[in-house]
Amino acid sequence: MQFEFIKDLDDYFCEAYANYDKICMLPGYEMPKMHQTQVDAFGDVVAYTLPTNTMRLSLQENKAALLAALKEKMVDGDLSFSFSPVPWNKRIKNLFSKKAYHKLFAAVLKRCNISVDEAGKDLQISPQIWKKIVKGAYLPTKNLILSLALTSNMDYVSVKELLTGIGEGFDYTKVRDTVIAYLLFKKIANPTMQQAALDEYRVSNLFIKRAEE
Image (cartoon, one colour):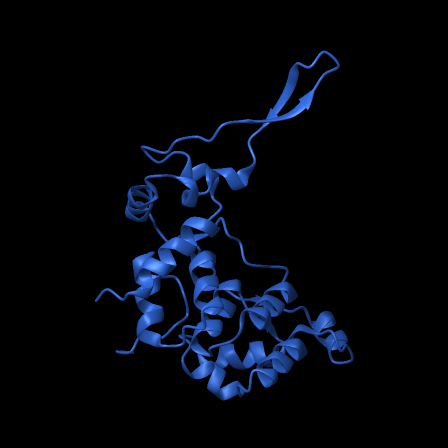
């Protein structure tokens, strides 16, 4: 089933996706012209640069064909399914720290009007692991936070806050991050539409329960 919003997602992706190593290797991609950046005393150009924003897919005349070729080669390699335990000394310290990650986690969920039980029910994760994350025994992975962002319909700012807390952020050289950022910006909460976007860009390594599960 093809949703109309996929065209809008494609336009956003062409503008935002920043993996220029992959983009410039696509057959038919036309490299932009170098920009003059330094001229010597005699008026001769001595330095050129190629600003990355000039390499976007959105600036290519044949962007639709290039995007189609890129989609054909997409494979979701963003695996992070193991969780890092928080050392005991850190956990004890976190009991008295307002900046402990599990306290930030709880505060963000509360601000988004999501209970701990509600937040975990649509995630493909064992109740034991989820409980340890909530209590601060484990740190969540980036994949888990992005999965939670979709299943709990969180806003972009809150998700970014949770990612920053584990030393991560939205990386627009990643297909997964670019697609999920679009869904958050556009506030697309319908699970079927979300899954259609993920399927379109072959994003599969998430902790989201499918309907049949």
